[in-house]
Image (cartoon, one colour):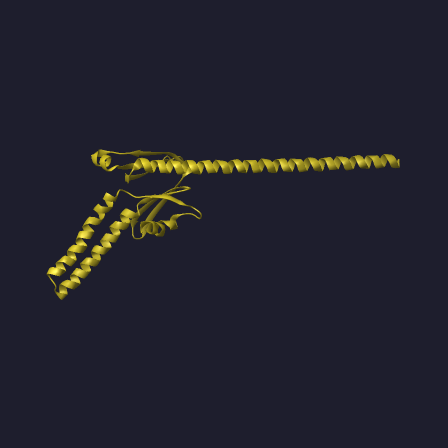
Length: 213
């Protein structure tokens, strides 16, 4: 269910042929906390209807339940859509600010200066969650996500994909340089061949002129 939901919610933010390597959310405890009161409100409304089964109460409870459901969905998306998408090209920082306001920051691996993590407090140590930070080269800005589960593992995933990306980029650059050198050498060879043919034609003309004279 969740992989299908991830593809549906996050695929639109990717470039063509970009592959998702991992999707990072905040710790599930934050999700439970965000959904606790909307869930209590929704079930409480129908529990009241069970004990007070009047027609007017039904309309009130229906409205109450609808508001609780919208509240639940709003908190769910606020938790679930605040995520990092780790791809084969970089990291996308997604922030959900409301139904009609989303912010996406793309960090290419070539623009990453460093990745670090920090675990603080007793709860963070026991539950193994903490802060993961990415420092950008171009602006010296730091992009952070707090309450990330297994921050050390997430840091390793980012660094591993970064290494693969830079290695592939270096190979592409090396192949490009080789192609340029091969093209320059081929042009030089063609130029030398043309000069040799021109010299030979000039020599033949001189020989013919000498024979005529």
